[in-house]
Amino acid sequence: MQAVRTKNRAFSLIELVIVVVILGIIGAIAIPRMSRGAAGAADSAVMADIATLRNAIEMYRAEHNGAFPTDDTTITNQLTQFTDTAGAAQAAKDATHVYGPYLHAIPRLKVGAQLGKNGVSAVDGTATAGWIYLSATGKIYANTAVGVADQNGIDYRDY
Image 1 (cartoon, rainbow, N blue to C red):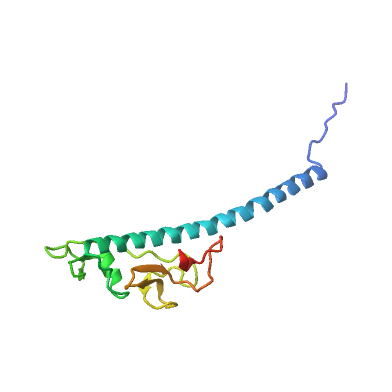
Image 2 (cartoon, one colour):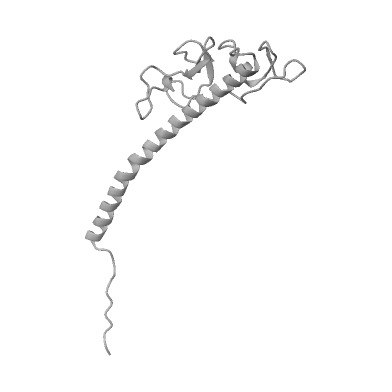
């Protein structure tokens, strides 16, 4: 009888080391790209939220004879409820409160120290506000410190 030779088949140590090195190279390339993508998503979300707020303010202005929402304490109600020609807000629509609502809710800030806050203030750096609104000009911007910038170096306040 002939003896049957069986050869154990397995990966050698060198083959395993090569696979680990290749996976390490792929990880070193992919991880920084994915983290930049997450930062870019937050930047895009802030830009979209500011555009939404500015569009709502402009729609309010168009329906209220060129007047902006009155101030930072009433802008939330004026944009999320029904209003009359003078800008008085209420939750239910009736014969005089026929304008709006322009938003379901004020969006939450996606970046910076006020992350997750959706309040509106006229004063920079207010701890409870995610947005700063200037009623004289209708300008609204993110409540972030000067110098807090996106991945391209653009200050969030300048969006």
